[in-house]
Image (cartoon, rainbow, N blue to C red; front, side, top):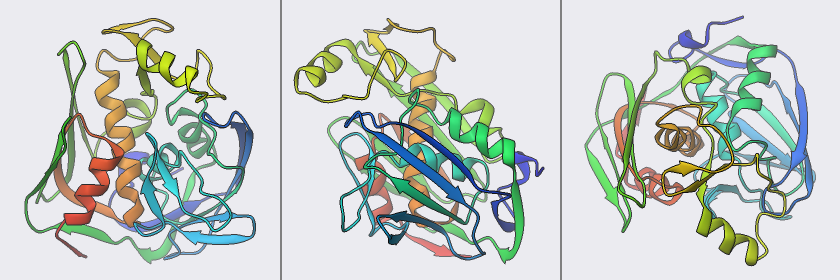
Length: 277
């Protein structure tokens, strides 16, 4: 098996073999089945839904309701970001994702099950060289809640700061040399007690249960023990990695996330100045 810490530079990789999983969609409560297959070099990530093939890109995705959504002609597919984050973190450049359903299963709100399966089956090097996005100029995007700064660097570094409604700040820095599986994949989605109540009253999260996310009252988790003291900041990085992988490239650059979101990630990608190496 290839060491995950050596998967940032070099040649492209695909899966050693296909794998399958199924589970509930968070919003719909319906079961989705996913089959992930290896494919040839320079293919990128390709989704297949109802016989339609959609290549992952900025133009085929958009930030939806607290998720990254794939556009298809037969109905959009939500919550693809955790699977994409695992692909980024564990070195998968080329794969076909066959999906039956309107959502990627949410499981515990992290990328744990995806990273476990990828580490279990392993990835294989291919003959094609990996392509890199080299940031040329510093950019900053912001909204009413947060901002993202991207600037040139000879390596990949992302620092996330999360400020809670009680003004408590958490911070974490992740680099290309760190273990994605140990440091990022297991960080879970979080929601606040009042937000969850409103969502349930609105008929959302039909597939959710007490294990689908961390529910906070202020800064106190109500339904689980934290896996990290700064789990909220780490999950922001998890989502960000999935968001930026729509480029089908690894990025060399330095990023600072402050209360980031899927919408801010897309806003940043839309103005990012880069060249492909």
